[in-house]
Length: 451
Image 1 (cartoon, one colour):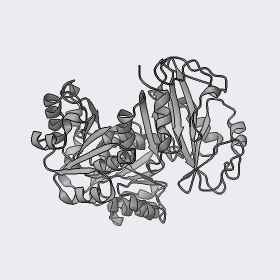
Image 2 (cartoon, helix red, strand yellow):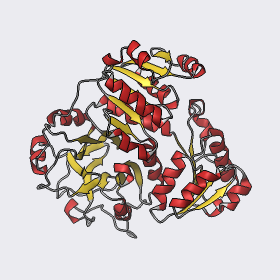
Image 3 (spheres, helix red, strand yellow):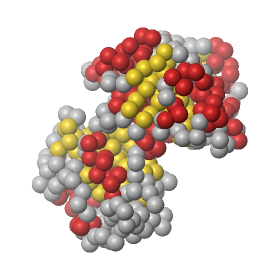
Image 4 (spheres, one colour):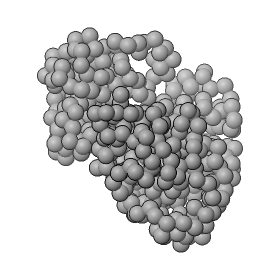
């Protein structure tokens, strides 16, 4: 697939890295030569320096023969204009635009067919990811499939926890529900075989797929559900901070610390129940003054990784019950391991899933990229086909998927149904699967071709 990426920033470079490893033909456009040079040095891709919205630059990139264009520059207007130009001048490429400003997103008529095919908002994706972690305290990762009917949840195994030293079979017996399935176990970043004899060890990240209404009970059964969150302090009132505060303020006691006085005044107009504080989130005296020791959750969500690391670590040292932070630079994840910070969220991974669902060749409607992007959970729709392989009409034990692809859930007529070895797939079934390695994605695509 030929894909043109507009923007070589954090989102553009991470998407380019993920897609270039899958034998795609990638071209990246940006006005900053040092960003393009860095990409060119580590990836086998083409780069073009110039304004991504200019027709001459787009023509130079071969947009007319591209299958897809991802407009992910840091400027909403550039992304929107570029997609408009492409859809006006060319017939073929599907256009995906990153749009951050709520002023634009609140007017969906701006994104009518013929202008922009698909709109993505990384800030909204990250907001939803954090909100899910707040709803299910104790989880390490939570993502949704089948319009929210199914959750993919991961937890970290601790030395004194229920899972430590248990075999998968014992966990299945404890859960005693055929709709709750162990999808994957990652040890030191690498997947281990998931079978009845697999032994779970301290430090493992264990992924479960289960219906929405069973997530909380699953966490309780595995002794991982933590006390509910009531008070939240957000460090950063940017796009993510504002959205998160808006999503939380009706159900939680929320405070936002914002260093830019103009931004603080701006968001205070839209946040009715949130306390807006003007100040530096790395200022110890400010955190103590605002009684950070009584906060259930401290979220460091500025656009600066260093500030996030420092403020989250400081808040935890000062007594915050739990602290999480956003990290864009993968190298900084190693620094988190040596701190009291409970969890680091990678925006580029959360965003990657929302983009990959449109890149996958099968009838894929949901993707969650996990474990640093090395593995994926995928929701695909089953269709009967005479020209390609299909799961329709076959039993689960008749599907010849390679080792490393685990069936997580089956949704039929908007209802999650139990999965057994003799369960027969039907037309229109939504199937959630976990691929332990991205190289296995092609096998899934082959079975789930669109009509």
